[in-house]
Image (cartoon, rainbow, N blue to C red; front, side):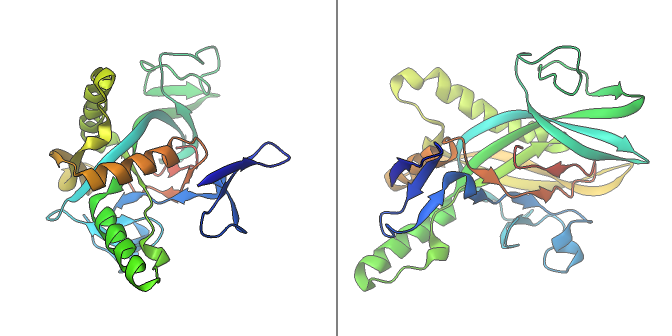
Length: 270
């Protein structure tokens, strides 16, 4: 892709095959891998079942409790999701980066430190901070489909745009947070070996889920287990998508998590 800067200083992406089309990087919207709960929209509409993992934008089933998703992690970020209690439930208010406290101060709605209390009171009302790990990843099955489509295009000159390779976002929060820490550990190992060329996208991981029960009912939480070494083709495609998601301008699909623990929404900044 060739990049140019417009008169307002915004970076544009110009397709090599469609030179007359200019697409703002900030217009690229990534889907979530969305774990379905009893009150999730796709379940309510009869399009999915509890425990299904689906594309948040299309509803396409990607996996379920008996069929995990093989993915390649590209990058990740840590966040606080802030929710205010209105009536009997917490409502999403904002997302902040989670760090060593670069924005700590007197305003509790601007604090970003790692060790902040999860529950606090602001203007006389209960608030909650929820730790979130967001992983940006590419699905192995998508790479396979993309490369098959490229081969077909080379032979026939025809390409199905729905097979274009796009990354996903996976949100690990609340009861799924421990699964996210396993992905974070893989990033930490890659960082420790970065001087020797190590990258987090040289190994796959498996995203599964299992049922849990508590006082609020029955719901599903994520599992993550190690995968295998990536092939050369997988590494090449992952490296290309890594550049996309680290551009700083891509956004994620704005949805409701459907998580039973709270009703906070996923903002574009999440």
